[in-house]
Length: 89
Image (cartoon, rainbow, N blue to C red; front, side, top):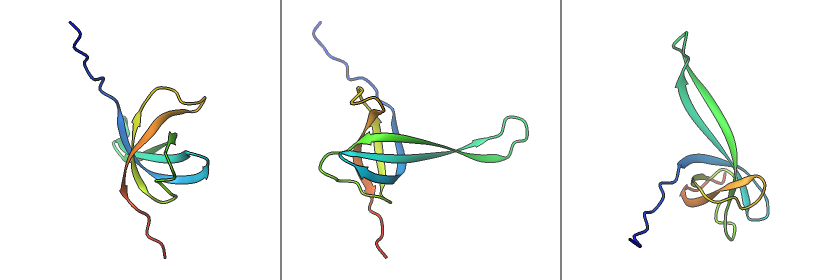
């Protein structure tokens, strides 16, 4: 009876476009969808504010974010892992 089932959380992959806030990054998530009438593939994008501890993600990094409880008014996502670091030129 006391078995706890872990809730399935949404996970998205996107690129960090801003890391100017403290413990927060802005992640741009792009997805490709087919237009319902014309059939052309179009790119839809959305920006999410995600919580990150100790500056693990910086601008240009590819990160995975997952849904979590609300941390602030705009933050309901958290960075779970950095998939690819940005190349410094």
